[in-house]
Length: 98
Image 1 (cartoon, rainbow, N blue to C red):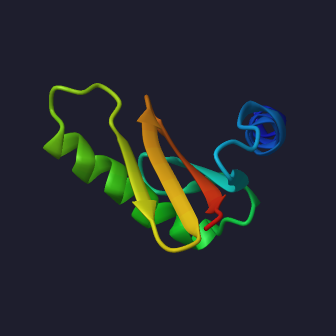
Image 2: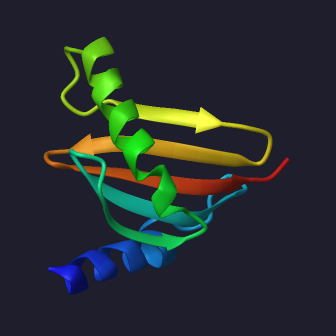
């Protein structure tokens, strides 16, 4: 299973999300429902696993009609996209050029 997670993280970083609109994928993390880190790649930290799971849980309460809402958090140069798919929550970090 660990090899499947590593392969998925590599695909996210390198091929699934090519550079688009001056945004480059710089990191990703997968966490379980309890907020435990399943895998991390690139410019992302396993320290954020718990908060990523908590954000996904809270947005599910706000968007009851949506099966898989996506949360976007952005600052001046970075964007984080968070989405739950079944028991796994994924977060993708992108560099945003000015």
